[in-house]
Amino acid sequence: MKNKMFRNDMQRLYVNSAQSRMRGLNPYGLFHWVASLILFVLALSFCSYTQAFNPGVTAKSVGTFLGETTIHFPKVLQHKTIIELARDSEKIGGTEKVGKRLGKLNLPNEVLEDIYARILIAQNRVSRSEAEGWMHRLSGIDGFRATMRKCSSANMAGFVGHVNEIRIADNAVMNSFSIKGIGVPFKDPLKKGMTDIDVILVKGRREYVVEAKSYTSTTPIPLDVFRADMATLVEYRKANPSKDMRAVFQITEMPSDPNMRRLIEEAAKYYNVELIYGDPAGLIEQIKLLP
Image (cartoon, rainbow, N blue to C red; front, side):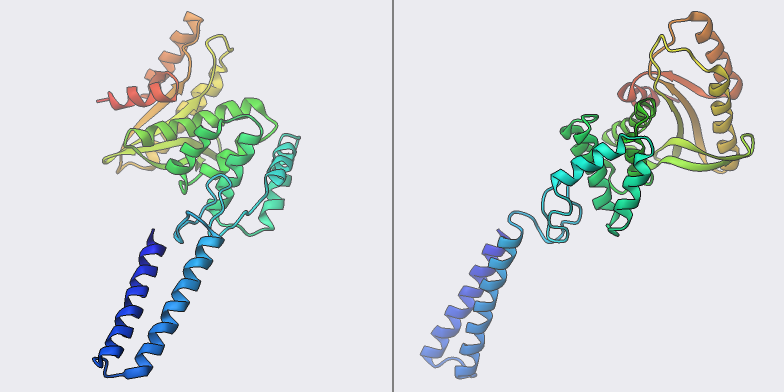
């Protein structure tokens, strides 16, 4: 549409110049007429080139948005290459191999995000519609690409956990939260090393630091691990005393064992952590109700 408008404007300029010349109204005479003709021809050439090179996409396009050609990155990776990367990622140590291969291409972050989204689609782990939603809402967020990369690995248990984190962030954005990061690195003094905060959500002046656990109701609960992760939330809160912060511990399904539920709830109360049972969408709805 913009190319058509530009072409029409240049055509009017050329016609008006010619008419002025014929009427003797143009003080620059033949020189102005010839210059206008040259500009008109160049404009037509430019419009034809951009349309042929990239029909329907503006020059502002940066990412490939799941394989669509753009001006900056026309067909970065063919579908058959994505299939190869998807298969390699599913092997033991495959994510490292794929990471090295992609690293040699020196691609921008937006394109790498797109590639990992396409890998997850090729692995049948995420639907195309869900991946497109992620790309529109989460692109550029710290940890988004790295978490998708983890989702593509051979570790299916890891996939379940990491895709839960992305879905929490995605549902939060759809509910007008902003995302500080996914898998935010944190040096935990209790664990004596680096760990991470699964998701940090922001609403107004308050931050919600979320430890996310994707467990079915019948899955055995590693209570010691849960307690240690609750303690990490406490340490993160201590490290940021000036911020209005709520610690949230999510479990996707309530444990069917009543004794285990009691122990988890006692731990959450001890560490002053909000314990919330629910999937990513339900979690965000419950966070919105917190005082």
